[in-house]
Length: 165
Image 1 (cartoon, rainbow, N blue to C red):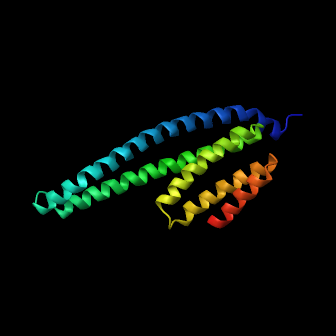
Image 2: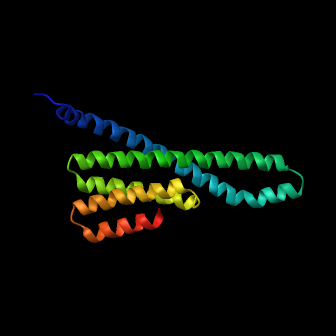
Image 3: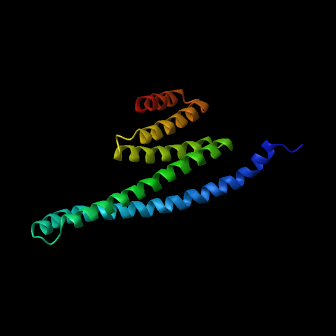
């Protein structure tokens, strides 16, 4: 008898492949976005003195500065959204890896997602959503560590999750 569970298991390789492709695309986007952000930060550092000088000499207006600020804010938001998408994809990949018995792969995916979640939370310390994302990922790590018999690691991850949220 063919059950829904059998169907679900049969679909796992396709789900895994689709997530892997999405993960790769997001990783490529993240690399490009990170490079763009680094470029913008370098430009900002180099040009902050130039902007002040241009403003002082009347070569740039407050409207120009406001437009530049708006653009940089938008770019930062785009980069952060892409990073969040990547973290969510990694979390989903970890769930599939765990289902397939690859606990080490699942843990690696969760740790990579956690690194992204932490960066996003540090960039916006007042955001409850970003703290919750860190906490959720830590809880996923704690659960996996407990399943693997790493009680010390699980306890540490769980405690940190509680402290953050």
